[in-house]
Each structure stands twice: as C-alpha cells, then as structure tokens.
Length: 58
Image (cartoon, rainbow, N blue to C red):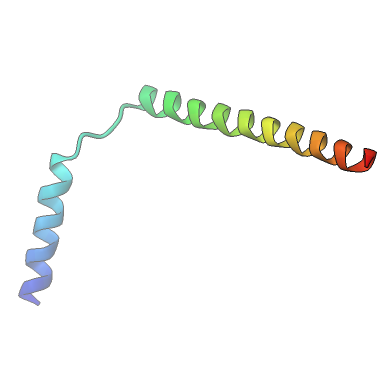
C-alpha cells in the first residue's frame, strides 16, 4: 500500500510541474488540426477522383 501512496504522491508532484495550455491556445491548436485534416481530406479526395478518372479512360 505504501508503494501506491508514494506513486500517487509522485504523480501529483509531476502534474504540478506540467505547463498546461490556456483555453485560447487549446482552441487555436484544435482549429489548426481540424483545418489541416480538412485540407488533406480534400487533397486526397481530389487525388482519388483524378486517379479514378485516368483509370476509367484506359
């Protein structure tokens, strides 16, 4: 039981050292990730359509 208590104390100690992002930073990073995913979704969709069209012409 002492090991568990020591472990949890260490976890709490380490979590206090973490630099958490602000709410504004979280929104900014989430927006960047979502826009990047949408960009690559559109890119690969267009690429797939182009390759499919070339294959259909053969």
